[in-house]
Amino acid sequence: MSEKRNPNSKSILALFIPLAVFTMACSFIHPVTPTLIVERGLDASMFGIAFAAAMFTMFMMSTFWGQMCNYMQARRIVMICAVGYAVGQSIFGLAQNEAMVIAGRMFAGCFSSGAFTAITNYIINTNQDKYIRAKYLTTYATISTVCGAGGYFVCVMLGLVSVNFTFIVTVITLLVTGFMVAAGMIDDTFYKKKPDKALSLKSVNPFAAFAEAKNFMTKELVIFFIGIILAVIGQICTEQEFQYYIKAHFGLPSSYNGTIKVIIALGGLLLNSTFTMWVIRKLDLKKFILPLQIVFAIPFGLMLVFKSFYPLVACYVFFSLITVIRTPIYQNITASSAKEGTSNVLMGFYQSVNYLANCIGGLVSGLMYNINELLPFQISFVMELLAIIVTIKYVTDYIKKSKA
Image (cartoon, rainbow, N blue to C red; front, top):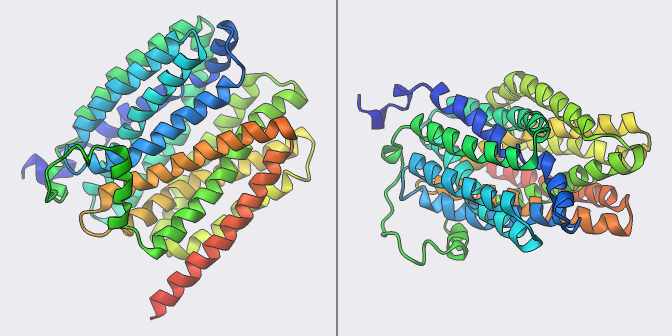
């Protein structure tokens, strides 16, 4: 059988092993970013602004890269984006002023979104069996969580040498493992519907690509994505607040954040390899997201009550573990909602929605913290309650449609 027709002609491990290291490299620079800002005398607000800048371009470009997956092999997109991502991180590492920091983060965001979108689409396109697809999407989500935490700890060791050394290792690792990821992928052209129209200047416009949502968007998906946006805004708002809060009020070093991340990573690995896979096999995911969202909102309410360190950490770990479970479930619902020939653009749109929510959540957290240090926690809880209301509407409409 030809390589095109057999996605198993190359072991999935040839994709996932280098992908794990690539994902770690994506987290290498995060812990040293505050040090870079202080050492180079930059405005302290750059930490939040740089994050929002990267999320904004990731939001703008994900739907574009999803469309590009219809025209190009996913592995070629990964190679292009690995190079672009490395260049963006190089600009960031060389930054001596605020403008250069923003430029580097925005440039990196343009290409990191392409790599992640192409990999997600590749997994969906080359695995038509919904259970195998769900297994691989869950594995990918687990890699993202566990290796993200692993990258944080690697960075702590690299940062002991210098900030510049950390960026050099990051750029080299992104390039090497990015090309290794591409080498572990097959030609996925056979699994995609060939576009009726040739690629044009209009189609490579990110705004035009985002407008392509009208070709696959339904009322059901609109409600679904609104629920995602609300939930993720609340999640990111609290995550950003939590990092500042435990340092400002408890005077704890960054190693505490690293320890918490490892607990979340190991817990997520266990949950996704057992509970999440059971849910995907046995339950109707479109109904399951309602109780999942209700449980997800509980720790956000409790964080408004608890003031001491350990209860706050327990709440943070709890909702972070639910986030690990939620990611592959949302991905599977999105993938199953695609009509013929729309999966690539739809998954790009899904990534864009997440990045938009990340961008808004990060900005809200930073701006509101200066007004009142507890305000981000309060806003997060309101967002989660609104997400419950929207999810109720989504599930109710789905049940009515199923009965009809």
